Every structure is written in C-alpha cells, then in structure tokens.
Image (cartoon, helix red, strand yellow):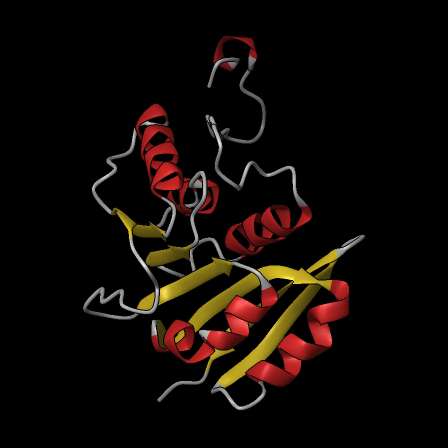
Length: 183
C-alpha cells in the first residue's frame, strides 16, 4: 500500500497489500500456489470462501479474477483488520470479512470455491467441515502443507468425496486442488 505510487500498470492487474502482522503477502510458496489455483479457475466459480484469510490476498485475487462474492474468515482479529484495510485499499467493501472459528462458522450455504491455507494437521482435523462448505461440483484448494506432510494430507483426505485435480510442489511446501463430487 505504501509503495502504490511506484507501481506502473503492466499486463497484469495488481493488488495493494499491507500485511501488518498478518500472514499472506504472496511471498511464501503456499500463498503463491493458492493464488495460482484461484487464477487458474478464473471464470469457473462465482463465489469463494477464504479460510484463514490472513491479509486477505486470496480473497482479493478471487475478486480481481471476477468472483461475484467473496467471504473471508480468520481466527486472528489482527488479520481480520488487515484484510479489511486491504479490501478497502483495493476498492472493495469489507462486509464479508469475519473474525470467526471455522468449527462454528455457519455461512448458510456452500461455496463454488473454498481455499484454506492452514497447517496440515488443522486441514486434516477440520476436513469434514471444510468439504461441507464446498458446493457439489465445486473446487477446494488447500495449502500450508510441508512436503514431508503431503502423504499424511493425501491419506487424511482419501475418504472424502473429492477428486485430486492438481498438486503443486515447491522447495518446502505443497498445495492441492480438489474437485468435489457432484451429489
């Protein structure tokens, strides 16, 4: 945000971001992989839930990519404040950013696309709730998975109505894109 005057518009749109003390600046492999998944699915989803939004970068990528509605949640109140400020800096309303615990979060309906950039054990522990929030035929992207924990995540998600579409691996981290089975 503080360097926006120095940015010149190129071929790609940009996101103004001030991470303050929240996670998710786009510099970490997990965030980059997730942003790539969101960009790859551009036009294939109308609404998105960003679980563990941090600075709000994935929600903003979804909005910039044409999502009609984005909901973002995080346990950390500082992250919610940072995401809210980042939404405003990019010209978006911040009325769908919530300080919420996924275990008790009740949005009232499932989403076309859910992204959850959490630690592996948290993903496996909350897998049923996360998948419940994905519309049948919708997409789920998960990351925060160290390469050594990738087999654990794959085994943990085997019993769910999901089809693995892509695995993105980096130097130390991985991300997985799933498609939920249609009902």
